[in-house]
Length: 407
Ligand SMILES: Cc1ncc(COP(=O)(O)O)c(C=O)c1O
Image 1 (cartoon, rainbow, N blue to C red):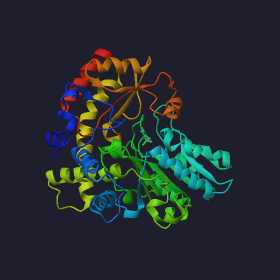
Image 2 (tube, helix red, strand yellow):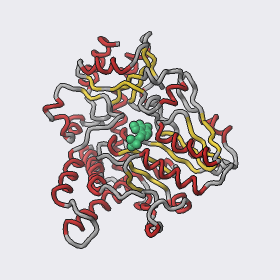
Image 3 (spheres, protein in one colour):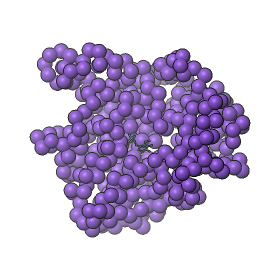
Image 4 (cartoon, rainbow, N blue to C red):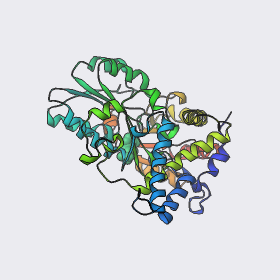
């Protein structure tokens, strides 16, 4: 069964918004359009429930219930326990808080493995722990392909390593890393695992329980929702790390790593992302599946659609002399986040594309380390063309025509 793209697009008000007409959106890795169910919930919250939640009076009770609903339904969809999921302002901030917890839990001389493939969010906060005597070991990408080789990780592991951090998928290399395999290697060496799923989750919510990491982070403003960072911390690790919240909240797992007060309306509106997944699953015959099954069905539909659209884009750019395609040229091995190093600065090229009705970006996308490791000047940056399951064949055709003119 193929994804019903007309149904998909009908769920996104942006596609019928007059001010966006005639523009094809190719900067989805920076932030996606928002689905109607999220916008509806956000508006309802601000109109009807915008009071301190969790009291007995009706708007307060309903607001609190909706916030709980978001956590309960998201965690069920992701295959983890309800209290293992929490919300913060962004993935960068969530990682920062976790790094503080690890700083307090670890002893000088112990080690953390980071990569040079990650976005800075899952790199800098850990690397800074070097100032506290924590040894930082870098798992390095291949400078040509940008690939992380799991065999190289094995050589970095010993009894001192407490944590291995890596991305499910880099926001410039695009290759999907084998999370299950890498997690098994790290666990076998006695280390915990932190996965940045920000670039992967928009292409289908994963079953985090099956993938196996101890921490999985993603950002809901890239998964068709409001601007939040969503963080799964599995119970065994969450109970071990020192509480970063108010002392009286320390017994509640989902409050331990969110020192800021939550953004009530946005947390509540996150339930709309699950409404969307459920509507998509029901539309494609999966309405009776369990929550993880509905997510799996929609994940597979999205991936198949994206992969089909992606291959011609890769084929069109991979053999051009003045273009270096980062990451694999086989669509099934990667996300549709396509970074191109050019023989000139990328930003003016992105601006030129916008005059062809192609909205995309150029720059370093906070991925300076992987760009430098691949010999690309972050100042010159890369042109990034990123799409998702709601992208149509017509938009891809338009992109290919525009690239013919501009590259
Ligand atoms: C792969 C990746 N990780 C982390 C982040 C940071 O997410 P946030 O903006 O929620 O801090 C981004 C943002 O672009 C990203 O692409």
